[in-house]
Length: 142
Picture 1 (cartoon, rainbow, N blue to C red):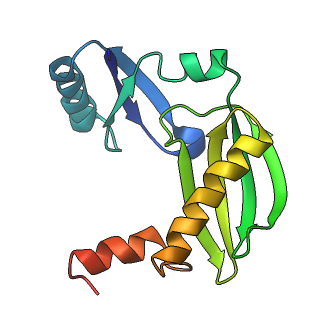
Picture 2 (cartoon, one colour):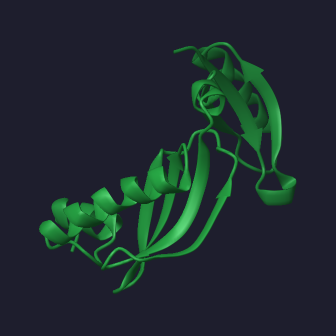
């Protein structure tokens, strides 16, 4: 997959793309220039080209909702796909609900994807434990 390399500065309303480059070496040179002459750090963002094209063409949307421990779905909404995001994300809102963001073809498809993850988490006795906690534990940080 082809990539482009963005040199960016700032955050939020101050965020700015300073340039788009065809290779990392060029982006690093420009990053060094901005880091010497600017009050803020320049960053390099690597973007895969055409990542959402097929999903958009095939009618995918990003669904947002809460899913309860028993599979109930609450506050379901949808939006356009976002570049660079994983196709399924979750985090526990509390001990009884997880927040889900799912790329899917329909509401039913999104719920099915999240429900499969819910069943896995329950089977492995991991319900209520966020991924960051699991990663820290596996690295011996807790």
